[in-house]
Image 1 (cartoon, rainbow, N blue to C red):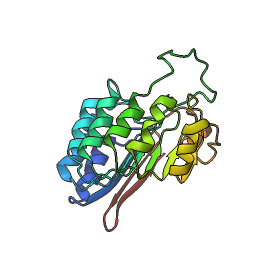
Image 2: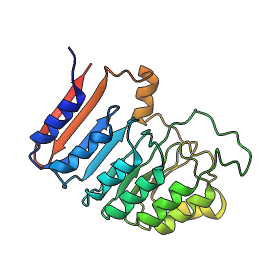
Image 3: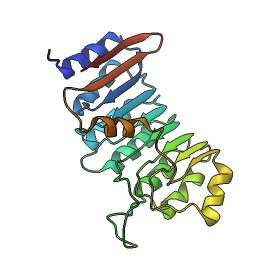
Length: 233
């Protein structure tokens, strides 16, 4: 039996009658995600996992229409051109944002790099988060290329941060003054070499192999009741 994902998504959003609060999409989101904002501006939680067909411009437009957003999960979702624009847009248009998961793929090994090699060093995202998201309580940066230089800005830029997940961030060394600051100011700190066995999405990819378009998960929840819970295999 075949399914049209675009029609299903539209139908589920329409059923929310403007009361959509949380949306979780894995593997099949596209630029048409903007349809969400035509039905509601009440969204509190947006989760886009392994979504590879989203343009940064469209995501920025989406952010501009979600002023109440509190949670954003962009785990392993490829942004095609300038991800910083999308990141800054969510910081600017979503002043209530308290939880951010901005996770990337990793190869399972520490990066072998030459100091100063831009291919493996990138602090721009960490600096954008520190500058634009002062209300963050929870930040997950698994597999990010941030270095100590970028990380230093986060405790000051996000003074309310209670948890910081840096697993697989192999450019970071939590020693000396930086490590001390993080330990003193952040209650729940995950180090680069900490185990990822409790990290569901990575386990799922490892167990089931490459994404098959015939397998996906789509979940919607409204303010008062479940509006849809669909799994197709």
